[in-house]
Length: 163
Length: 185
Image (cartoon, rainbow over all chains, first blue to last red; front, side):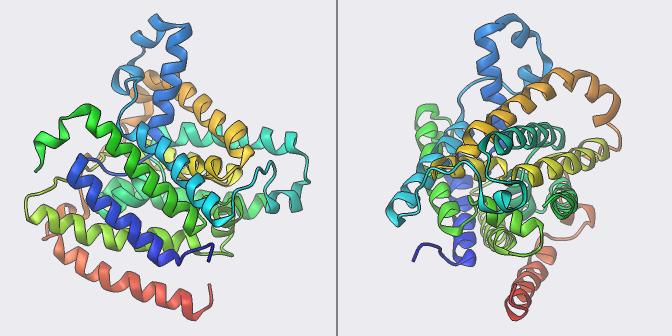
């Protein structure tokens, strides 16, 4: 069977959270690692500017636990896809192709636009669908409950208009 | 708490990687790395993402709060504000719907071979993070601090024991899941 029950997968992520709290004192999260990577790349070209930047003083451009976690997600998903025969190079997802056509350049452009907006939003809100949506939500954080509501309200409205 | 373990940096990097491999495996097996599944959730056609999230929330909530009672873990609560959490959350949702992946599942999408995730979304996230870094200082002074409410939890807000929130949620969420199944969503 390629796909597992979403309830079993969710319970597995919950148990993984217990383990990461216990052995690493860290909640599962992803988006900060992208900001750290940007800092690492910019540092190659403008080291001084990055060192003076207030954001990069708070979010240091370095490989940390969560950065390794995101790298691990790439590897773990690849392993699961390969052993289930689900691995495949695709440029344009099916639902996108039905609505906007199968041209890779158009999809890449809009993925870039969406990713840029999401990158700004994740830092603006202080987290993403993992950090706020799962880890923050189950810790009953007020900020995370509000963030998740906003993610899904604007996400649903945008998707219903767009797709 | 296992403080001596938490301070071993090199070992922690390996643990982060291993935790990530497990998480990526689960996300792929659950279908959460698939653009069609993510956008299906946002269009209210496919509730897989919500089922995964709610199931993770119930399991994580009970376990982490129980471990906290035993003094084995501490919570990591993010502080928020109206200007940051609400405005940022609404911006995030727009990008989330256009892209069709979230910051965690996009890494999994790259792993399964989605090139729009690798060459579009991931690069976009790096660009977006960079834009934010350079507007952060001004934004923080003018907007992010509006309506700040600090790192509080719902039980703290209502001044009740966490279990007064956890137990009802641990009963309500499975009922909601059952309703989703009954309605065939």
